[in-house]
Length: 189
Length: 239
Image 1 (cartoon, rainbow over the protein chains, first blue to last red):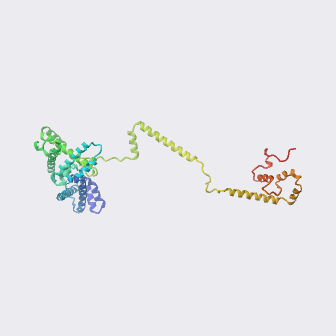
Image 2 (image 1 turned 180 degrees about the vertical axis):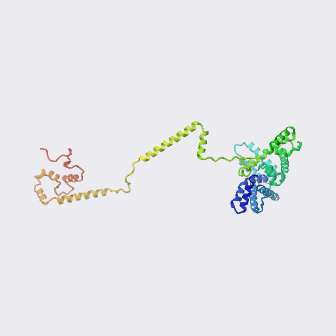
């Protein structure tokens, strides 16, 4: 990434005590991290919390950042770990964001009024089906799908962020797409 | 959607996703396009994966808003990302006006020009009117105000002064003579009045006619005899 130098410079400025520098990092990356968290967790509230926790964790571990990896990869790794941790906690508590009917009902009212009710219901049903399908993927496949589809990262960026080979990223994405197709097949019939 | 289990699997799965997400080079893309024409498995999966991709985008756009793009903010830090966001141009007021005129039809341009001209003319008229307005010389607060009583007092004071002056000027001899000649000197009364000498006659109420005329003359309410006004008739009969 061409801006890696800028990101590293901002980290150096933050380490030297510049209070604005870390805020700049947050401003640059919060949308991407939020998209990643939303794709991983499936709920806006959880995604916001995970985004916040990601930047808090990054700030705490700022001194441990050696510059060996890019800032983007470093932040993505923290975000993915935060999401996985949150999901484990939720599973222990018996919460399932993907089956939250209240959120589903709220989404009906949020849709535009000019769309016909039948069309609205169909879109909503499809949206819920996709969310459930993505949520049911194993974490290693899900994070690749989310990084590609939500964050629009390149294969190379995903490879660097997850510290896995480029071919692994592609094969994981291929596997994930096949599994998603299988899970969505019921909806298409 | 065909069942995944019924589809054959091709060994070029990685090339397929690279091609689908537009990250293949020109040579790789051309090569895979040729492969697609021969491989039913890849051709089938291309269509299926496209549907999955569209479904995920639909979910993303519904959840995060259709205008959402993760590269919108950090575009500078992701120049090699798959999507580029075009930043909105910030025009100056003059440039925006020029652009507005360039795209507006002729009638709108003419109407705008006419409205601007009319506004200018009205402005000039308003300024010229304000310029020619007469200036008030003295404000009402600075001018002394007199009531009817003040006015009556002033008149009475002046009358008293005149009466006193006349009293001082009239000698006792004249008074005596006038008293003796009273029945016969009727014709001289006008002459006396003309000389400004009033005959002091004790009257219970107000002034005599002569005194009033003298007073009026002194106050310049009526012209004097020497002003030669034709409508002032003498009391003397014409001979």
